[in-house]
Length: 257
Ligand code: ADP
Image (cartoon, rainbow, N blue to C red; front, side, top):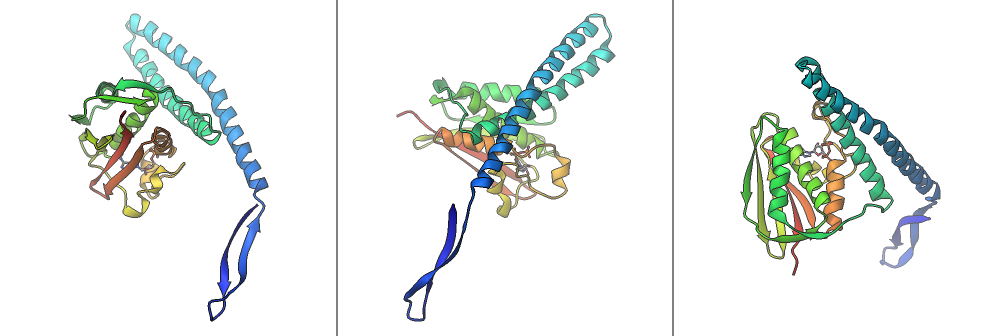
């Protein structure tokens, strides 16, 4: 049972009583649990057929390429790309269920931060043709954390920067040490976010509404998952933005002492 309310006072500021309401949240909690169960089972069940579609598409593409049938091979290449997108959506849904049920696991090791950043940039650059990702990597050293999860956060910030700046042609990644933390920022010159929506973008399923919502594909989960990952690693994530000019998304992680 959850209660909210306000104390009441008379003219002489003497306490008169309490006015409020109490709500039994058992049913709400059960419903939330049912939704989480459904999300978990659905995304898990979607994974298997999608993995096998991907495998067949790749084999067929290879066969057509070998036979010199470029047209068919290219079509299968496109199919493979769309399957990758589907795979990423499913992975995000799975991550959300893991967060809700407290089952997101972290495999923490010490690693070379700069090397990881370079690898992720190379990966994202490979699939983005319009934008050049510029590097200003001033931090050198070891960081402790889950490399897959940290890569996921950097990838998310980079792909968002590219997605939400369709008219720009560069994105800047900057790393530096700030006191006991390492900080990574991704700056773009895109559509930006208004002040009142800035903090909401880290909430699950939140997408800045308006015409833009339909222009850019997405579920509104990437930043929510990134925020959870960074928080679990004792770091912080935030954004500075000017609507119409661009955004800078940053996160920090504690350095080993
Ligand atoms: P998605 O991109 O799938 O919608 P995210 O959780 O990654 O989900 O982002 C949530 C929302 O925050 C986006 O829908 C978009 O409105 C806004 N957003 C995220 N990154 C940027 C950016 N670099 N520039 C402008 N808006 C952004």
